[in-house]
Image (cartoon, rainbow, N blue to C red):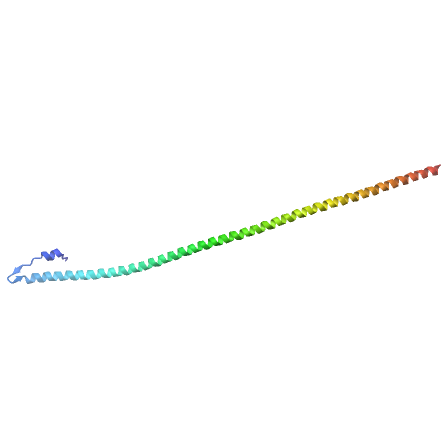
Length: 166
């Protein structure tokens, strides 16, 4: 039975000679006591529920703080990783550029060496051609002189044959 404030204020007891009917008052007081007991028990249950919910809320707040801390730590770690990756990337690029410059410098040196070698070979070739021409010319002169000697020898032989026939 639910009793409201208005029910209590509007409750009318039957009267007797000396006051209100004792029986009506006792019944009303019993009903009122039952309802107050029910409300008290309900209030205790609600307080227990509130306490449990507050504990859960505190636990959730604690978890939320842990999650916030974890997110902040993760964000900081992510930022650190990005920063380190960028530094490593720049370092790798600098090292690659240095290696590329070394390779290019080596290639230029090699190219210069090849040009020097080609120039030296051209000089050797020209010197060889001059020596070869000189040798061929001396051999031609030798052949020419032998031809002249042969011509003289043949002329002398023909004179000798002419003289021997005469």
